[in-house]
Length: 321
Image 1 (cartoon, rainbow, N blue to C red):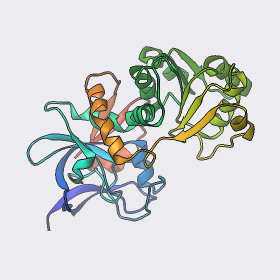
Image 2 (cartoon, one colour):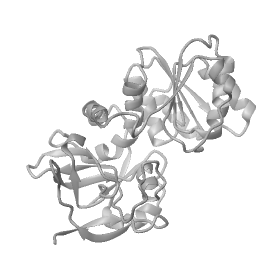
Image 3 (cartoon, one colour):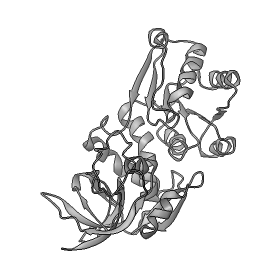
Image 4 (cartoon, helix red, strand yellow):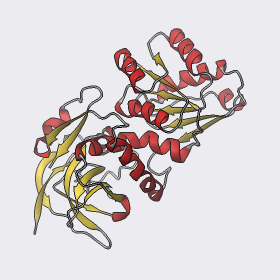
């Protein structure tokens, strides 16, 4: 039996352990790649807790949803995992070629591994879930997270005329003005002040990219719709993340009194073929430096310690097998 080292989740209540496991064997049409880098994304952590909506609840599992690897012919590829049991945080991974794209030789694999997952959330939302027209205005609700910060840049890159960034951290909000935010709104504990600021800055947006959900969304919907000059003008509210709560109570009047459309963007809302079609231009944008990426690397062998470490704001950890 051929073995390899991997991060292995044996309990949803513990961090992964670095253990020897059987090297995976490819099935029909699959290939095996040498993993060079895998991002430690929030989505990876939730899957390893069995908390993601796609989780099967089966153990043990190798965490990791995407990575950069080297094929047997030497080519570099970015790939997404096809099985929640056999993830990417290992020396070798089984890859479905339909979920992988070849990368330019010599490309820096670290920013690709770090940025593809968080950047894909807004990139796919704005290209596959809503029709962002040139000049449209966008509100990013939860812009101070890694994915939200990238969403500000991506909205501008894809043609938004105006981007409003909303989040809690004042310092990180201020930094987003250099990344494309035309206006910032700090979400504070003062409900009246926050609602007034959102109404003033975002009442006329065309698209909301919502990484928060929960109470902040409940408040934002009412504040924005109440101040909207023409409620019959379409507003697309795209639910992407739920860091502030898994559920939100939406007033029925909000749906009756405005041209408001809710939709989600994530695994299941876009076909695998659709996701694959978006990967090449996104890789090009990251490689060209059009999307800011700050990273730190750590050996996969230190996965237990890294799992317990909180990333500094704006930085994504990449594990190197």
